[in-house]
Length: 163
Image 1 (cartoon, rainbow, N blue to C red):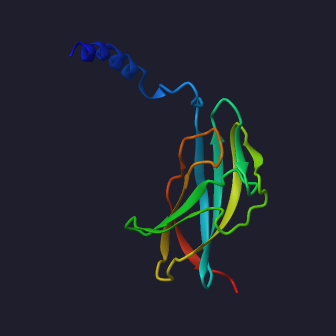
Image 2: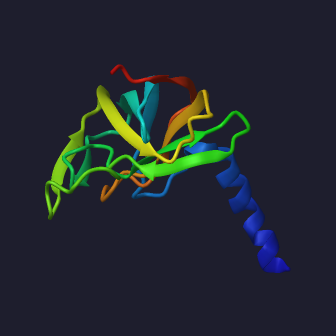
């Protein structure tokens, strides 16, 4: 019981630090993944989601990612849901690609804002769904940045692809 009471000042001190209290090896600042725009084209067997993504790095340094595809966002997944929140598809952004760099290539996410456009083919979405909800989420592959990145959810209507 005496040991329990000796922990109370430590708990109070740690609580006063609030959410800014980080482990020594944790980065200062965060990487925000922002889905600034999304469109969708329905093809016969798949839907292509075109995503405009902003990476906002507020950490003290560049973030190095080791990529097999030459991309900063290898470990991120696309999550497609219906209006009830039911997941229709969840797949890695690199699902449709073959690795370009077998051993991996270092790709930097610079401090500040950078933008990337992603075209992601997704199979397994029935034609009955008109409006879909899309978000991106996951961890950067082989990176010292260990936090999960996630965008807000955006609603999109899949249009038929031009013939």
